Length: 557
Image (tube, helix red, strand yellow):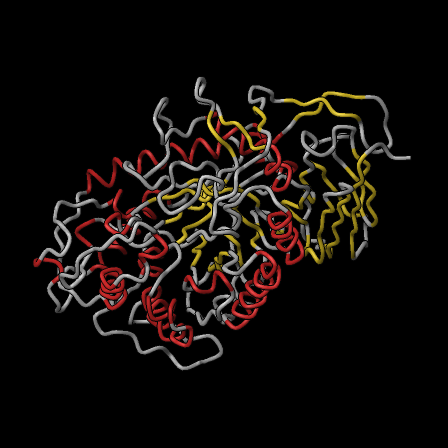
C-alpha cells in the first residue's frame, strides 16, 4: 500500500538524465593526498563486485542483533529498489519490447547508483494460477482444510525459471535479490493483485470495485477474502497452498548466493486491524500463527505465553515450510499494514533462526505531520525488534525497511533517507519504474523507459536523493552514519572487530555528487582504495577500538 503525501498526484517537474550504461569505468578527480585525475574502476558495475573490496559478499545472514552480516562477518547496510510487476505475467524478466522487460541495462543502472539489493516481486497467482473461479464451492465451502487441486508443477517451474533469470542477471552486477511474495487488496477483482482467482472466497458477496484501490480495502468482499485466508477455514486449504508455493520458491533458490532472502507476505491486511487499531493485536496473533503454524507458535510482543492458533491453520506454517527445504536464507517477515504509519507492531518472538523484521514507512497524514509519523514507525519497529528477541534471534532479529517513497523528489523523501541513516537501517525504495502499477501512482518510479531504445532513464533529482554515500560492509559494528546533501559531507563511526580481516567498504557516488573528487579523512584506520574510487575501503589501524571517517567534496587541502 503506497500512500503519497498528497491525494493529488504531483507533477514530476524534474529533469531526467539518460544513464550512461556502457561505461565500466568513470573518470573523477583524484581524492586523498594525490592530485590530477585518473581512471577508476567502478566495481559495482561488474561481477567483480563480489570481491570483499567492492561490498558485501554472500551469503548474507541474520544471526541476531540489528545488522545483517556478510560471509566475512561484516555488518551490512543494503540500499536498493523494488521491482514489482503486478500484471500478467506477474514477474519481470528480459523480454525486449514488453512492459515487463527487465534487461541488463536495468541491472547495470541499478548497480551504477550504488545499490546492492533489489526487492523483486513474485506473485502467488503467477506461481499457482489454477483454473477454478472465485467462490468455487469445491474450495470455498467452510470446513476442514483439504485440497484445492490447483497446483501445476510445470506452470510453477516455468514461472520460477524466469524469476531465476532475473536473480542471476542482478547477481552478475553485484546486486542481491530479496524475493517478495507481493499482494495488494488480495486480487484483481478488487483492483489489486496477488492471490489467484480460485483463492478468493467472499461468501458470495459481490466484488464491488469503488474505482479506488485504497477504498476497496473497506469493501465487505475484501474483508471476507482476507478473513478466510487468515482463518484458513475453507476446504481449499488456502494457507496450505500458499505455503506450498513458497516451498517451491525456496527449493528453487536454496543455496543461491545471489538471493538475500524471502519476504513472506507484502503488507498483511485485516479489516479489523486497519479500521479498529485496538484490534491489531488480535490480527497480529493470527498473522504470527500463519508464520509459525500450530506446532511451534510464537508469542505476541512483550508476552511469553504461546499463542493459541486457529486449529485449522497448518501444523507447519510458512516459515518452517521454507526451512524444511532451505535452512539458511534469511526470512523477512512483515507486521500488519497499519504499522506502516506507526501503529504498534505486536509480532513477537518466533522460534526460528535467521529472521529479519521487515517494515514499511509511509505517511498517512498531511505533509506537515509526516516527519513525526515517520519517526514513530522507526520507534515502534525498534521496540518490536527488541521484544522479539529469543534464543533463536539473540538481541532481536535484524531489521530492514523494504518500502518507502513512492513520491517525487522532495525534502520529505530526503528526510526519509536521512532517517534510515540515523537508525543505521538498510532499505529498498518503492520503486524502480512505474510499470502501470494498479495500486501505485505515476510519480513513484525512480526511472522511466526510453521509448526508442528501451533503456532506463533516471529521474535525476530523485536519483540525487537516494544515491548517497553509505557504508555497505563494516568490519565491526556501526554506531553512527549520516550524509548532508547540501554540502556533500558524510560521516561514519564504528567499533572495530579484530576477528574480521576484510575491509570496511563505503560507497561514494562520484558520478552524482562528487564530480570534483572527494577528500576522505579517517581516524583509527587508513584508506586502502584507489583515490577517487566509488568504493572507498578502510583497514583499521592495529589496536584501534573505534574508527571514524569523514568525506567532503573536493580535493584535500
